[in-house]
Length: 310
Figure (cartoon, rainbow, N blue to C red):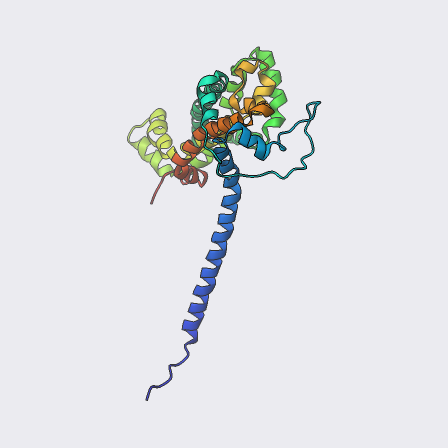
């Protein structure tokens, strides 16, 4: 005769916790998937619509980009048809952007010329400043560092007028230097690299001093290599920030020939919506590639791990 199994409250409680834990994970995954779809939808629409013909774009989104006779926007009364898959795939938009109309590529290289020097030199200047804030402490340096933090918290629109006045005084308005100089000496990278470099154990530096290392050797052989993750993450953030800049070129560069593609995109007229999709897709590629390549460094640098493992 089989004896009935005894009820084990401990096992039942563990089983109940596993079920609740599984339900919580499932809910979190569903919520994360919903947010991912919401954020990815505009990108997917931009890429897929860039392969649509002009007539198909007009039939689907014509009411969105319609204008009145006076040039203003009109009230949208028609239903907009969001299409993810074109009826007929066409590469005519990319053919026009890459070969038939050089203005787009010219503006693209304007963006590269403006952004790459800012990223490189801002990292160099910030790395030197961060080393100074890390190695030499004092009230004056802490006040200066606090000033850097205040400037970091300010949006760029607040400092745009002072930048314009200083650039005008230096005589660099309508030149690329008006964009380069404020970008190179931006306090954002200094703050992040200083917080990261201060997490390097002082024993590393003391051991290097005992071995006879000078300040430059300590900087180049110890501090800079251990901040590799932070450097990569800051480089990504700087690139994305200045790659999408709009206010600075509009205010500081009156010559449209010097404007980057980010400014030029907003000026594409309603008859070139297909080209706008194609240009926007091309413009997204550098940012996406850099982000995908440095994703691990980005997370590591923001969390200030300094590349040091126990």
